Image (tube, rainbow, N blue to C red; front, side, top):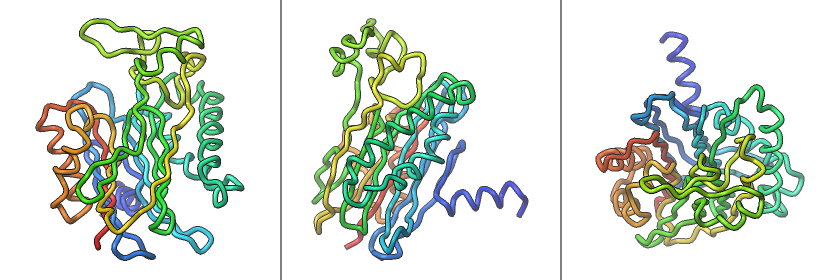
Length: 284
């Protein structure tokens, strides 16, 4: 095994991945019935892969945390890469993470965005969307997001969206109140200042005065009817509804195979974006 293969094996084991074709899986040590799998595929664009993800279980103070995230970069991959390395660390360092998880996540999102903007000379002018999910002791799920990567949970075969798609058309008033505008050119999607197709993101220093990094945060309890969670970049959601995604993988038992199958189905529907997907399965 050469050095490159060893490095890739280490990345897969740690759950930190990005490449033209990455895949991996793992399982909870505390709750043997919980497994996770992930898959990434480079899209048909001319730029390098801009998606990054985190998918792992971690022990913290006699508790087990499932840490799952999709970071979909734009105008370069450096901000998404930075988020992959730093965002969860910043969240877990918040002193009230265990007592007020939602507030801790909001502060960590803001602090991380501030640090990204301070390092814009190094990280470049680009930005990234993010959807993060923290599974606490297999019982409590806390989802946060900025942008249009999405988290969906399946309970008794019914899809429920846990994140909010931050579309410029939905936040036009807020953007305009900050002095920006939302373009609506025929044949194109609405864009902030005619440039960015999401209303919230990390980075994007040139647009930040008109762009929010405030996350939406939602808490969902894991119950006996919970079957699985999907986290995915917009390359899937542009061509599939939440329920179609759930139906696509509800009979696939292996989490990694489910993530791969979902991406393959999106590609078959002509999705041209970079696509990254995590599936967390609850095997009852």
